[in-house]
Structures are given as C-alpha cells and as structure tokens.
Image (tube, rainbow, N blue to C red):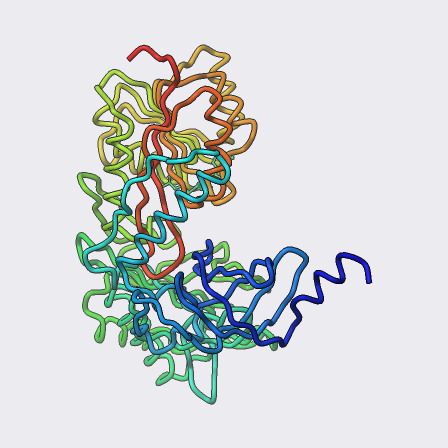
Length: 463
Ligand code: SAH
C-alpha cells in the first residue's frame, strides 16, 4: 500500500463518523476534522458534536451527511420554513439570526487572515436586519406540473424536482401573493406549464416584483411561445384578484436553455415598469432591469460606501462594475464628478436613464471592461481620487489590480460579495494600500452570502 491509499483508507464512503464541528464554511456547511481530513457536514453548527455518514471522499476533503446531533449548539433553532430541507434556497435557517451575523463576520476575518496574512483585520460587527424575513423584492419561480397540479417554485438542489414555494419566507409577501394567484388562475384556465423534456406547453417562469417604496407590483410571465390560449381572460383575472398590480409583461423564451429570459419582451397590460425609490433616488424598473434584491440592506450598504469614500465635493470618483449605476448616483451629490464603467450595454443604458431621471449632471456611464478602460483613461491623464469596485464573485481582474497600484487613487472602496476573492485581492493591494476598515453586511439573511464594504487608503498619501 502506498502512502496516499493509506490516507484514503482512513475514511471511506458509507462510514459512520463522530466529529466536532469547528467552523462554518462559505456555503454555510459545518466544518470538522476526522483523522486530520477536513469534513464538510451540511446543517451542522460550530461547537456541535455530530454523527454523520460519509457520502464522498476526495483527495483533500470529505463530505458527510448529518445523521444526528449529539451535542447541540445553543445557536441551533427550528427552521421556520416547511420546505427548508428540500429547497436549497436558504442554508442557515437552522441557526439563530444573531449567530448567523457573527459567523458571517468570522468568515470575512478568516479569509483576510488566510489570504492577506493579517492577524487582526479591522472587521466590524455585521450589519443585519431588524426583521430578517420578507426582504426579497423579486420572486423568480419556475413553473411545472407535479402530480397533476401546476407548481411554481425552485428546483431542489442538485435535482430536477420543483419545490413548491408559495409561502417563501424570505420573499416580500406581495411577491408570494402574485405567484400564488397567477398559478391558481393559470390552473383554472388550463394554461399549461412548459415541459422542458417534451418541449411542449407554455409557461416557463413566473417573475413577481414589488417596489418597496411605492408598493407597485409587476408580473412577468416567461413563455415558450408567443401566442397562448386565454390570455385575455388571464389578464382580466389577474387585474381583478391582484389590485396592486400595475404592470403585466410577457417575455418569450423559445430556447432550450437554463437562462430565464428570452430576447423579446412585450407589455400585456398596464405600465412597462414600476416606480421604486432608494434613499433620495428614483428608478423606473422595467421587467428586465437589474435592481438589488434587498432594498433595505442596499440602502445601508450604499451609506457605508459613502462613509468609506469620505467625499468632500472636490473628488473624481470611479464606480467600476457599476451595473445600473446606483452607487455612482448615490455618491454623485457629494463628489465633483462620478464615472461608471460596466460591461453590459443594457445596464449602462439603464444607468444613463437613471442619471437623467435623478438630475445627476456630473455622472457619466461607459460601456467597457474596468481593467481596460481605467488604464486607458489613466494614460490620458484622468486621475481618480476615489475608486469604488463592486466586482462579481470572481473578484478583481489581475490587470485591474495592477492598474490600481499604478493609478494610485487616495482611496479604494471595495464592495465584495465573496470573502475569499476579497481576501486574495486585498493581499495584492496591500503592496501600496493600507486596510483601514471592513464592514460586513447581511444582504441575504438565512443564506451563506455575506457582503463587505472595505476601505483601503494609499500608503504615505498626504491627506
Ligand atoms: N454596483 C452594482 C452591482 C454590480 S454587480 C450595484 O450596486 O447595483 C457586478 C457588475 O459587474 C455586473 O453588472 C457585471 O455585468 C459587471 N462586470 C463584470 N465584469 C466586468 C468587467 N470586467 N468590467 C466592467 N464590468 C464588469
């Protein structure tokens, strides 16, 4: 037996093991060790001793299924959602909310320790929600037929079974009501769900959206065909039973794809968009327009960005990865000029429209790659004072980090949705920058996601 097979023999699939959970992983799973091998146990909490059955063994880790909690964490609570086990949309409902916030902070600290080699990174307490339920302004549920009944929900993790989600507790009640009612009416009218395998039927997805500030709601039906039966009756019933609805939209997606939306969108009834406000800013949200999913926490996030940016009114601010421009517009009243860069042309168009709507004359938006456009501007003599970055989960491109180290803005405000890539990127930025503050924020309670607003200042900069 060689050395590696000896190691593998220490733990095998099907084996029952008892282990102590030491910490939470980035997906909300419990992490423990068995014979020095790292073991991930879903739904186990730090401090718990658990019995688990090994389901998978890899070179560097193993995965085990929780069988029984032997010693229970005081943070363990009964998950309120009836389909918590099947759904997979949430991963921390079995943990007390305050403990969730503490563990999210811990994840950020751990990542900065591990990647940026900072012993005591300056990480504040996680900003949570007073009421961490009903926070999502958009429900996007697949439609299917199950046991002779129309069902709307999400696919079970790792399977193709739809989990009925008419009472999803992280959704704003208005979105649940729209999904429930639309499903009911379609059932009554006999409008069929789209069947992916047979490629027959009509309704693929129900998208319900609510504007928190105005209460306006929108329903988008994603269909596999342009025409479908009884559409007039459907609209009439929807309007009657959902008086808050101001916009009914159809999007046609004929393709065999896991993407939700197709290319063509048409208005079935009412306005094309709903009116939303965030702080001082107003937005018209069309069916396809991107908007942050938790408005209450987004407002707090942007306030943290503003605090970190430390604006006096004389600065040139770049908002990189700007999406529909909301951060740039949030900062525009406090800066001399703001410029956003975003890859997706449609989002840039939305950003420009939002700027106009909000009278932000000092804000411009540019289509392109942040790592290409910023260095190009730098060559032309554009010298930003503050650069805000809000990258996707993959973090900052290496070329962008090199460019930041050359351009040397006084402040970098890094908005992160992934502590791992944050840690790695901060490690590189430490070459010229000092890590001043890290503010974790809970945008998605009961899931393992954590956002952070990070302030880095140029070393030896004259303030
Ligand atoms: N700041 C926005 C959200 C940004 S999400 C807000 O607060 O609402 C990240 C954005 O980065 C996405 O819109 C994505 O299209 C964009 N993106 C991804 N890679 C990019 C790149 N290399 N350059 C510029 N934008 C990019």
